[in-house]
Image 1 (cartoon, rainbow, N blue to C red):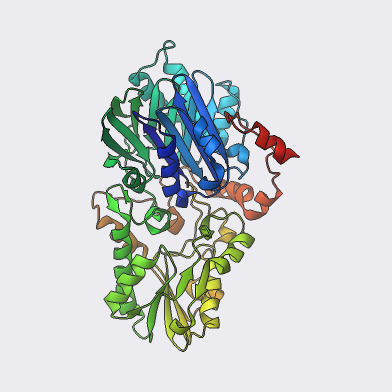
Image 2: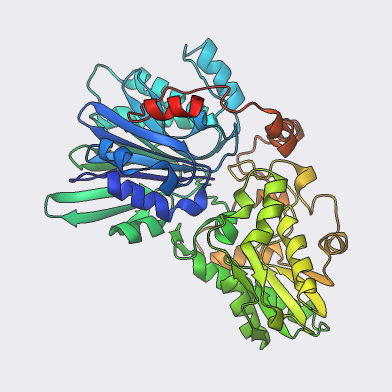
Length: 513
């Protein structure tokens, strides 16, 4: 799960890309990068850290040009080293840069093909570098000369779809030619198109979420369709083509549960409206099955559960209170690498207001329970604050399976719900009662906003993987490679990727010393 932006403008785009990344920071707080294109030259700066820490004034000045792409990373496959910060770059057959949101499920196979058949070198463990090289190879196969056209680009993307499996929303740029954006044939990860009319002409943007368009002054046009490729040349001419047969929309339902901002529209679905519906259906379940609970107050776990909690409280005619105050300088604990860091950060991020808990039977509402770290800590905080009883409600069903399409749920051993009953989970987090959302109700909550979406990727809840290539052997392989223990063993910066940073030589020397 990452955030991506691509812009073809009529004015310098460095500030627009930076501001867009700030808005998409919730999709990745591990690393950030921007590449701009000016004529035949790319300008790049990227590094580990938050957007505001990675980019200084000197870096922004170096990012010249009226077109570019940007990326915020949340590490999934690969490691969290600076070498794997995106965008990635190759210089053959043309200068190409790429940013990727998602995770490829056949990257190991592709890496072998790159070496043995395509004669291309992959230098990192990142599946995004693999994807870039597949795209570059397919462009090389379709390009008839040094001059490209949109048909060649679309044929190349069609070749990518034939070879690549998994989830991928992509922005890429070919030097002095234009911006390419495409989405996997299942449409698992989101991608939207926007435009703005300026005095010099129309500017186009593609981004992971519509909120980036709102903030930057672009108007939402539509979503990129599953399997579709969009091409915008350097003059701002827009074209698109469906590049995958039998493409069908299967968006990741966890986007609506947690990943996306509530003020975003994804696949013509309001994330905020969906979370309201989730609260309503959860309230109906409490009426049916948990009416015996004597609930005094409903308290959300800030921030993603607030809409659900408000609607739940209204539906049950219960008092709603803000019982936890959030430290907004602490990032999203869910996407922090390592269980120890997540556990420490929960206490740093949330602090209870004692008067809202003392002597009361409290219903805590959260968006989901994944590892159980946050839930366990928060239940204990509520008890320490004087709560009489603590009930816990999850707006999502139990997470029992890894999400292999770009969300870091690496190991079934780390998922609290795997192999446990609801009663055992309740005991594990220390609650007096645990209420989970039913999966059918969650699906209906999203479909109410867009009935045209017939199937969702609900793999982390039901173990049904829409790409059809996930088996027990695959899950065992990724668990051994991506668990917290294995990540800790991997040396930092043991590998590198070709870098275009212009203002970093002195910085690297200082870091080395």
